[in-house]
Length: 219
Length: 224
Image (tube, rainbow over all chains, first blue to last red; front, top):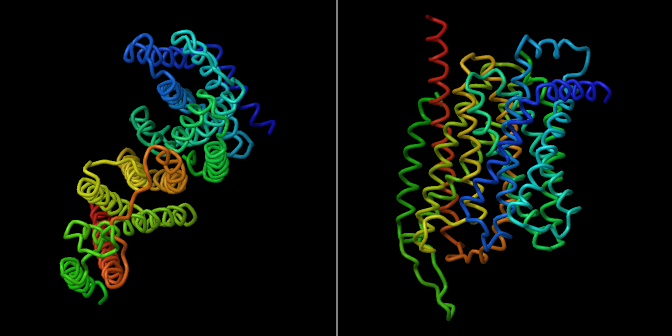
């Protein structure tokens, strides 16, 4: 556990020195929300239906940017080899990366949601539930995303390949998270069905990723 | 021996299967409001293609999953060839499932595409394994390709049931339960089973051919 924290801490420290990835994620998420507000007009009538979709498109697309850099940044100066030489379990690298990616995602979410509220003059009836759904959805996204980010790290067209292979696999997360977000925003309290899928998805993919991560970064 | 016979067995079975599909005995019946069964015509018989295709697609993807695990465990090239051959056939069959499903939907409900769980899951399956083929084509080195594809083959397969469940709760409030136009019982069930057998044989034949191609291309690579 300490190793994971160290790796995550190292990632975040290098990230906050340049803020390169974080800034582009934030700007991109902002742009998605703004483009949506242009596309749907200033005060769309069916904002309740549009809101969850907009939010999750912004989260996943901006998250994709961060994920594609997550391992790619380790390619410079042979950092990935250094990481693999660490006397820690390979799955610790995965968990560390998951932690740092999650933190970056949460920062992005925490900026995007207020901007969304401001731009669309939206009020959230039950913020705690919304946070719960977003956390669950983000975790599922990051668990699979980190594994596939490592998978594409040595591929030449990785920025192209990652979205193509990640989106089909995270569709359950997107579907359930959008549904649950929509229900929370429209004041429906029964989100158990979606939460169950999100939870199962997260748990299964976390365990599977721990087991097969070492095969991904073998070379 | 088996390899020589397999194409012929497949051919004969397929011909019989197609004959059965269009023969009068395998008509699918619906029920009039007063309970009298009536022949629904030829269109519902697309089921005899659709269901076996879906079965073969699922079988093919299951083979990808198992061979991927076996590859990661044993590192034998054979298992990678298994996975890649099966995935290619699976993507084609899954595409045919989507097309036959759409044709049926146009006939039955008047629209080409309908976001019911079955079709949506098939679409997600198709996308996942198209992505699998993308992974394969993106990595030139054989060993790395096999390893990364195996990892993705496992991840994609695990995603399938989860996709199905999420699509179920997603599609549920939007659509009324899909009415069964023709209840299938009696002789048509055997026709359907025979078709499943025929399409499975077709899969086996295509699979063995693809394996031969893989082996030959490997030999050609080594000869160079």
